[in-house]
Length: 617
Image 1 (cartoon, rainbow, N blue to C red):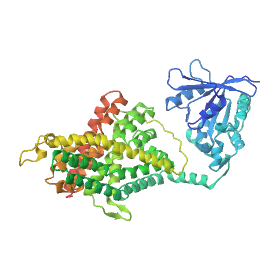
Image 2 (image 1 turned 45 degrees about the horizontal axis):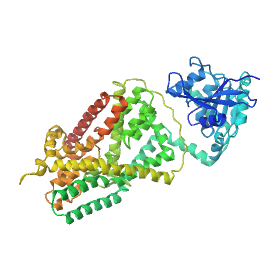
Image 3 (image 1 turned 30 degrees about the vertical axis):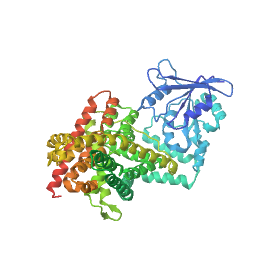
Image 4 (image 1 turned 180 degrees about the vertical axis):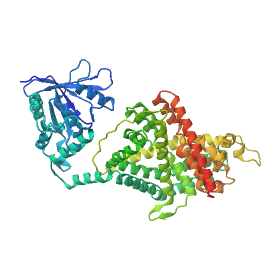
């Protein structure tokens, strides 16, 4: 009997290698690190049917022998025997996900082409059959030229057969196989071959499985796919305004009623003004946008749970490659639409340091949920709520344009950065597409509640605190008789100084004042404006006006458009700057981020204002 000393499990991520490793080795495992790297080495003892022990290693998931990450580099070195003092595994066990066979066969062919003793574990065969896909392991074995053993690791099915195949792998490797995958073929050829082998191995498939394949053919089409993605985004932003309007109006009415009730119950005093003009008006002006945020996240969570979001990342990879990034940057940038902080932290998965730095620097340009209240209040105040076509609202179109402007601006900045301060070659990107499935109502409800609670918690902490501080700055020192309170206040003096800088781009003093607290959180700009105009009101009746009415009475349309353009590019909150400092280990890149984003915001607002004035808007 040929004596085996070592074997290794290899395959794509999510192929079920760890489950198979645990089933084969049980408690006979040890974990260490590979020499010189932080990647974990998991090894254990596999007992063959003859009783012979074999050291089995669970290698990190990989998509190829040309590594693009530390994990893939370790896998390639182990397979090729390039670690000093360590020999290559005598048998390679390729673990394939039976339900995603075509994708996994690409790497499998590259490993088999090495000509080493190899066994294929066709894992999770039960899940493939559950989804309506029945495979022929013998047809797959004939095409690959190596033993193919169906397994279900979590149920311990096929483990004895797999151990027996490992025991006989060396002897079988010496025998010629006419249909053995050809060596030295490129990635495109391997993909074509993987498709042909997978098709030949299918015994039967249900209409459901065929439907999924047809959906991918349409949704991932290089021409049709982006159009569908854009149409879906269009529907989302139309729904943000149309669907949220009744709920937002109800909250607005409640906030106004609460303010009126407090005014009626309390005698005139600074304490009453703090409650009505500061806390209720300021915080309430932000809380009113909760329905829009919930609707936006409903669509985002639905796209994630259904499996479509990964396809959107695949579509975006082509566009991102043109600006020097890869699809690896898509997930962090996508996370930044909720908040730039988790988005920047998610860049840790990007292995190329220049790719990672570029992604960090452009993450604040993604339109985070904190911007939505700012966009919503300005759009509702200045953009007519009218239809520009069947089912197409002008307000939703403007909101979509703002989101697209942020994305396009980020891509242009990425292109400039990749050709200057973060110059370097773009790295490759491979991702595994999840199966399509209906989102679970319970999971969606939990996700929406979590995001709504985060928003309300910010309203009850950051926004509340900043609003109270701003109200104090607006009310002290007290104005003399005949003097405007805002003119006399500390906040008024600060705003007068800043207004000199932003006046050329169409900003008045009140707009300038709102930019300062917005550095704590974007949505505070709304509460800042509400508090400022509430303090300016000459009587209680004027003070009960909604924010939109006050804005229309104080701003022109060019000023409003310039304010929107500012917030498309303006620097993120101070928490984002702090996270950038932590992730880049210094203040150099956060300072660079602040400088270029302020410059972009100033130029964008100025160009928008001057253009609008020139057009006579």
